[in-house]
Length: 163
Image (tube, rainbow, N blue to C red):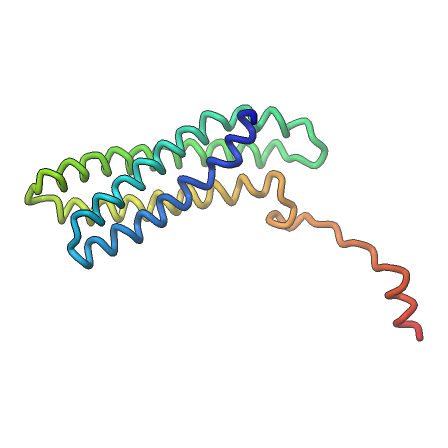
């Protein structure tokens, strides 16, 4: 397995981690469960770590596809710029989750209000990273970018219509 494989595998962690963590946090806030809120913070921390790994393996992924026919250097550049913004967003989320984890464990009076702030950060981070993932998918997946070439109909199918 090389860095390109790692990049392609790990990119899903921050996308799903930020979204699923937000759902878990929302459930924890609704049910007033400190253990559920703690679980959500741990998911956010893992998502932030995953974003860092994805970002730092991105260069190797770029090098492995930039020479292939049909690959747009513009799409790669836009994906790379979006990835930096997403990385910053997920780092903020990870740091906020660490602070929230500390507040939650120490049962600080601000922990409930801070959890709501973390939820907003998580949702914003999800939007950023989902956009980055979508842009990355356009680089190699023609079914996402809409650049598909329609297959020629089979000869048998054409003959059936003529009958």
